[in-house]
Length: 330
Image: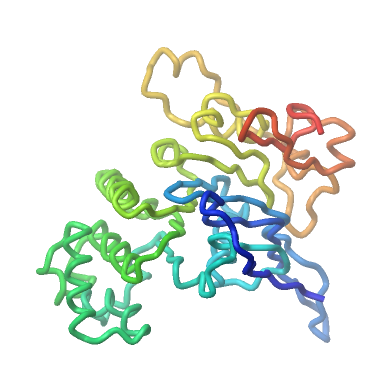
């Protein structure tokens, strides 16, 4: 029987993480045949555990299709998890979803083209029954906050640039004063010239309001700039997690090493000294994942144990966990 995520309601001390996710699973059934029966399942998220502190940015990184966005959508309640345990603010909040918002990749598709910008920002407030005058005042305040000003209130999304549209999406995400924002590739659809402006806006808002971010991205240069901690995801599982500086400087899992080797270096000397790691082998299908380590088909260090057993995350240094028999033991 399909399980359900449990929202904890027990008391907790204030220093506990804002968000705790334990053994989260999201499996999608694959149906076929005359009776449309379930023939297999895709393990899109397969036992993910993570925490996010107050005012912290955790980056969730990995290749497209590894389960990053599915993880974020499950935390937001946009997908029904197969199983797992999620606690927001130690489970003391009776309505955790009201304190979470999302910023999606494409601001154009995130905004109703027939709805004026001010009305779009007011939508979450309208749904909560906030009076019209208060909604308008809050929308104008938010437009100023994201650097657009009152003039954008009566315009349509098509009348502003892509970077300005993403600022509008950010303003709408802030309308209900959330504590956690899921940033799902928030700048990947924007021109390179304006990405840094949006990233700096997110960091300024975080510093001002104490926001926590789950920052989903495959752009390691951006992640290096924004993240306090990094969790590397592969085939539905986290294979390495730790402080950003540590993971970038000393990646331990072979997959993490390959990812970090592709990050541009500003220092020409260091760039010449570093070898780019190119992965070979086949990327497994989520329908037929390897019995042991999911990375075994592409890993140059794979052993028979890797093919037979699935490694779990082992702490190699304080706050640094790795799932690899060869590099971390366990």
